[in-house]
Length: 360
Image (cartoon, rainbow, N blue to C red; front, top):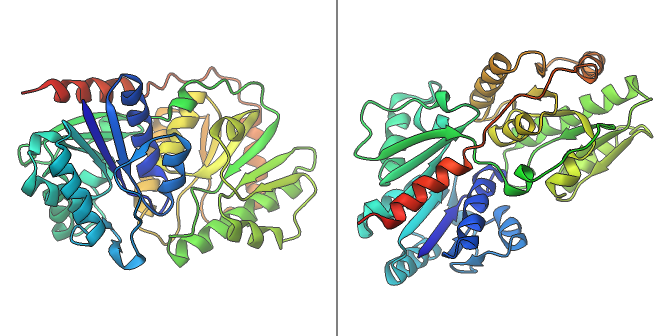
């Protein structure tokens, strides 16, 4: 059967990597799979050998804060191809207007949304914005809502006829198959890149990197590796008199290389990274974004994670300096409790997908 996917390619890769996991598994099962992403998502799709719906890329003017404009020529071409090819399922992540627009011309039951819990419930949004997102996201026939814990999923009073299925985070297949080995270094992950993000996000990323560099000076006996995935961030951090015990990577590095030998990870509190750390059993210090729309979501992620796994996960506030971080890193290095059992949502998601594919 044919399964097409559309995944928002900015500001990071969070909306792309879960979709890749599902699409690569569906391809292995013999389904005909095609995908589309843009900006930062393109290279990830190519790396996994997935066929594109179209190769064209949008201009910046065709991409809004909430995704691709559904009335630009690229979006219209994608929708036209879907209507021509008649795939049994179209899976869309992070594109509310593409979901609702496609539902006007294509069977709703053949459209599936992949959502974050905050896509359905975010108390920081005004009522009008919440209603906007509900209307467009729930235009799909089915919604897979995945987060650090499935009990973070709040079902709206009016689901608009959309079947909503909550589950734990859909993880990357290469993380699920990974063996992290013995911890030998401190790893910092500064996110999926800043090239298409706000100025505040870029500045907060640099500040986060500077604090980690400061912590490394307090721990000269430890080896640190900082993964930026962004050359501009790496340049800014490198100008701060980087100690000899710190290595900075500014290009994309495969997850098995990032996590291999990590005794402690310092990172932003995004859903995907937290879930990977819980699955791999690596202690972590979590930091929320600053001055960005993701701040509220990441603060909630930290709160829930610490509630579920106290001791193994620690929060660092925006004002906590390198001395504090070094102290907390040392506490986590000595943490010996067994790793928690985090069950990814992949199996549940694939079961729902297969059920929808064979439905009348």
